[in-house]
Image (cartoon, rainbow, N blue to C red; front, side, top):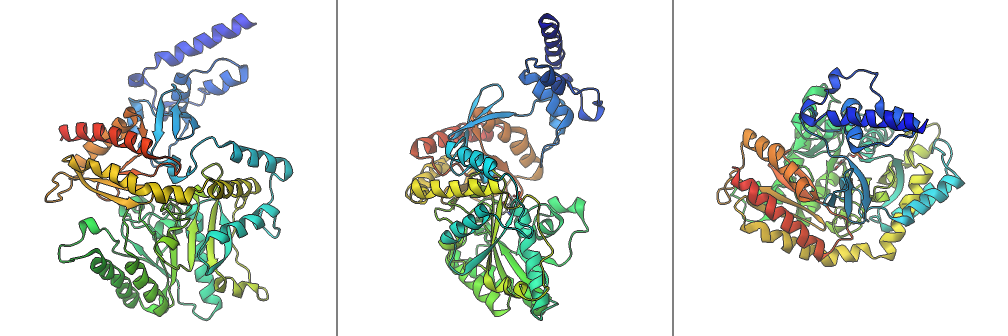
Length: 500
Ligand SMILES: Cc1ncc(COP(=O)(O)O)c(C=O)c1O
């Protein structure tokens, strides 16, 4: 029996090893008789990296990923995470320069989070927040509010950022209908901002290329300029002046649409898409003023900036944004469980305390007890290990280390805050000329993404705006890792320039 199994296993291995990347079967031509991995697992046969590779090509659909290169190349398969590093299926180690996907603020493989999950699974493994509450959701809401801007008092849980973006819009629309402003439903957001993929969240997103195949989307969303200071027109002498101009475009848009129809303005405190666009506090002060004047809800989308990324628990505090709603997700559990939390002012909840009023909205897995337990354990670590202080102390060192890259001809700008930085790549440093579409394609997809990964750093080369390399490493790293990141980027960006 054992001999039979091992000969079958070696047969399977031969089958997979014969499939070199250049001759792999495309997923479109794969048939349904190819569940070799499942068969090997059932029978207890040894499973090789090649088997995973082929199976992924045959059956997985990666998110936001071009699959055409996998006809001839392998896809990266990450099998393990520990501390600040992730490891691929062949055992190669990578510095996690993106904290998973802006999620793993505390690094990978935290035993405290695993213990909290296990304990909760045995105590109460599931209960929805539909008509019932459970202790972990109740505890977590208060623990979160302790760190939030003091005007916020109520939390609606979701399973992620996009759902919280969507939920805020629905609550605001419904609130306005209940409080005598039935026409107020429109949303204004910023150019190039990403707010999620569901039809509502995608409507609020400001990236045309991401939307065009899914139109018509939810109507009634409008865009205003973001705060890309590096690309601001020369007429602005200071960032403050530019910020005031950008904020005033919000007022213009509200007036153009009719204030009685505009419900909300969505803004990321540091805009990820386009490359870490920060804004001076005076920008947010003016935005707050405009929102107050026209009774427009200010929604801070802190999906990325929440939970320490900016060097404060929430960037709304860092920039004194004073939002009406705050969208958070990702690092709320340090990535170990899916969870989102939408914070809001009590005034938006009040009408729903009356009579038969009900918000007809919810998600089966939102506030999953295990996710809530892990989030509480995450907050414990933030407090016990003084993560925020660590980021505040080290952020200037991180910035200075990255700014050393300014001596490279391809580096136009280094910007960001906290542990969240973008390096904008340019064709000409002096004129700030960027790359055309073809060059950008060749540089980012053809070389950079792969070269960074091969150099041992997992981070993002992004061209939703102008080409940038995005960095958002675990909040627990320090100067040694900053130097490692700089060295790897220096090597890869030097080689990128030679190819232009
Ligand atoms: C600012 C912002 N909003 C919303 C989202 C959507 O979050 P999720 O993917 O959890 O739905 C993201 C995701 O990266 C984001 O960066």
